[in-house]
Every structure is written in structure tokens, then in C-alpha cells.
Image (cartoon, rainbow, N blue to C red):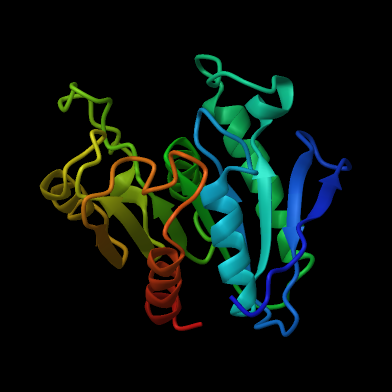
Length: 224
């Protein structure tokens, strides 16, 4: 990577819940922005999101990685039961804050739980984000394939790019294909061969070439 942007500590406390996390600013901006949300067991500084933010920034995106409200309340552990609405409110604030920093489109992305909340928010708030970038969407709990998290899919009308490992216990590629057929908006499913739910980043490092390919797919899919 020729350009490794510093991740600036970022806070916006004039909104409730506040937005806390990092901001990655490109050397040459494409005037588009990306909000990234983390999974239930991590934070905005998860290695996957940090690597993704750097690569997106190197192509011109201004990237806001945010700690969801549940993570702001406690440094470790999963979100409390029934906390999703508050986390979506925090994501909405993050999108609106980022819109004040860029002049073109703002995309909303996330890994696992963060992606699920991003998609639900986009179904609830039509037009809030200009597209979705969803990593390892948790289609159902492991070993419980009948408990699908697709009730909001028929209300998703923004373009949505999914990145999913072929060994993800939260949903097979075949199951994901059937689920995406429920979405009226334009979709694309990019498979990551042999990857599980963490997409190769479980031990703190990951395949940079693979992540770079996802960014290339994103640029083509969203025409940015």
C-alpha cells in the first residue's frame, strides 16, 4: 500500500448518542464517504475494519469508523438484549455527521452485527445512505438456520454489496443467495473462498490482497 493514512481520533458530542471512533482522510478525495461499524465482539479498531479503512482511504474515500453505542457503554462484551434500536440511532448520527464532511455520496458498511444494524437502519430510513457494504452478514445464529434475520430485506432499496466467506457458520453461500433474492434493490454477493465469519482476520492480521479486491469490487459496483 503506497498510502497508509493516520487514523485520527474522532468525536461528535453534539448528537445523542454521540459518535466516537476514528476518521481516515485521503490525500486526494473522491468526495465520497464510508461509515464502518464493527461486530458484536469487537470495536471500530478491529483489524479488519482498520485495514479496510486504510484501503478505502487510499482510493479517495473519507472513512469514519465508529464505536456503536453499546461499545461506548462498556469496553468488552456483546450488546445488551434489545439494544439494536439505540445502535441504529448511533449509526444514523454517524452517517449524518459524515455527510457534513464530504460533498458526494455516503455509504454505510459493517461487519456482522454492525452490518445487520446498518441494513436494518437503511430499511427503516429510506435514503439515509447511498449504498450498503456488508461483511459477513449474520443471516442466522450458528446451528440455527431457521432463525433468519431477513425480515427487513424486502424494504432494502439501496444497492447492497455483500462479502461472505464460504465457510461462514452464520449462513452458507446458498442461503445467502436465497436471502438476497428478497431484496428489491440491486445486490451483489462476493464470495471469499475458505473464509469463515472473520474473513481471515481472527488472529489480528489478514489478507491485504483479498481486501483490496473487495474494494475494487465496491468501486465497480457503486461506480465510484
